[in-house]
Length: 200
Image (tube, rainbow, N blue to C red; front, side, top):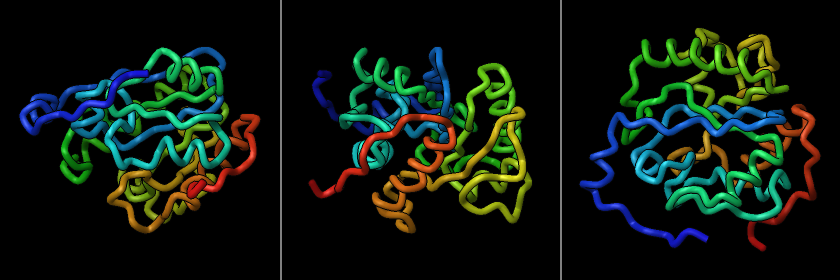
């Protein structure tokens, strides 16, 4: 297990505009697309790494993975292997790291949708799930998009929009995040386990 560490403000700022490699392996079923990496994610070199982000707790609660992943100091080889073995890949609409997603421009998000479509076409998951309906609307021009399966098929693949797991998104608590992620995983053909009580 990787020992958890804290990054200083200077260390985080040094990773502004950095990128985090996509996590995509063989047998890809569900490709999850965040909006863009945060500074903590860029410093750790692992997606959704900031402590307090609810992404991995939601995957665990949903029964998509059988143990809780702590990516706050980077992935362990076992973490990466678990995600790949479950058919899960992770990418971003926009690759550059910022402190907040609202630092991105409309042009970056629109270019990001094209990049994502190309990534999807190359790797051919069964489902691509974009985390964040507002960013999806801007990136694709689908102004009336709501959570759930979409009319638009990015890269020719079934496309879902699910809630953003950031702690800043107060609209959806962990059980709701887990429910949406579980639906997308089932649509992608992932054999999910039992739903878990996040309080347990």
